[in-house]
Length: 178
Image (cartoon, rainbow, N blue to C red; front, side, top):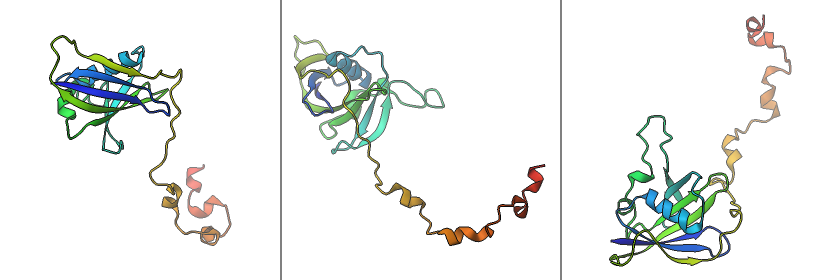
């Protein structure tokens, strides 16, 4: 079968490419198809990220194994498309170039029979021009009140337990300073 994807640049302007690729091709093949469809030079590192239906990023699937134990981390070439994506799981996030953070929302739009006259992967449709620079990303913390986690209800009176004397000999540290 053939998987038809729409790769949409995460930007205000509509910039997307429709790509057809064989279902048993890997994420690395899809990476190469996206790089070619958008005209990147392919010299930068990239990753796919699984996500939920609301595009919330989950597990990273990198190009290269960067784990502590070689061969332990699964990479793009380890995942056939039909193992990861299906009619029930249609969305994946793609990030190209971790300096510029070109981010794409990639969605499986159709699963169809291959056309005998077509070679795959194939660029089916192109809309919009890729901007010269990647769109700015705004990163937000999940917990808006991050510093409240460290709040311990101590005030200046509680911190005065040392009696205001900064003599470290009182605390038993003098043997470390000789």
